[in-house]
Image (tube, rainbow, N blue to C red):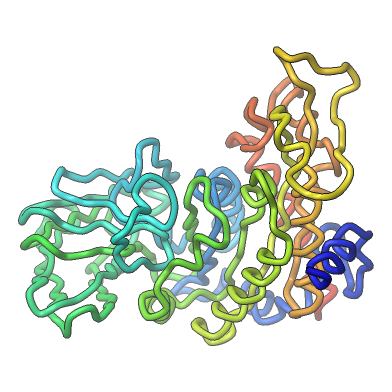
Length: 415
């Protein structure tokens, strides 16, 4: 108990910067390998694209920020395709930019969080979702916009002696099958290459029981691919439910050059925030990703500015409640404020980034600081939705521009 109180006291104090920061980016030196690769990406024709793998919550799942960032980088370096996605359409309202996904009946969904996260939970990988065929002939398909055309398709699944495989079609033409017959429970990622650029892929399960954990489309002609793997409502603790062997196999197949961790909003909106537990989870998951990826550079995004009208969240952590409206609230229309746990989340993220040598981006500061979300919603052309949490497409592009501008400055400092 005494240790927990000491940690909470420390977390409530201002964070003393121990690393070099430029704009919102701190510890840019940790990203030197990424900066060096990106500088050459536009000239790396005929080679696999650079790959950014972002894992997070609804900010990642919605693809507003990641979609804007993908567009910026691909305009600069060329398109490497869309990247990795959760298989099929794992939930109602599933959003994708640059590709359209469909699936037939005959699939059972598993997830790290939400209504499909119940036990017994299938083994899960980077996407946080799995689809298990419940009938032979169950299918799913992906159609890409021309800018997201691809010539390499990868499918990751849990193998087994009786799991069979899937039939594959590119642009409506049969391309054979992918076999997942293997020792029971063995994760496997298989790749099929097209003769030229394709705009669609369809797979059909041969029999019930095949569990697919992710799929991906890439164009091997340089450029950049940016994968957005987010689970709506999730926290980093839910990503911890993924399976080491599955994640390791997927990382080996997808070979990210940069991993971006983008959690924190849902931790900050939790009814009761446990700072000690959160710090432990953050340290463990960073160490885990480093170990499973072979020490790929990691960029930690601080939680963005987000606001609430829920009175119960005013006491979800120790600390001062930041009021974001000058007019007092009423029972019918409570005033906007920042839940105190959000500030604590950001303080932990920044301190852990310093401790572990991670690059850290201060998302809230680049929005304008505390209560900035109110201004983003109230603009003549809003950049956030009326929930004061989520960004629309225009706001996502604005965040992406700020992030990449800071990364560009960081690259110059890290030389």
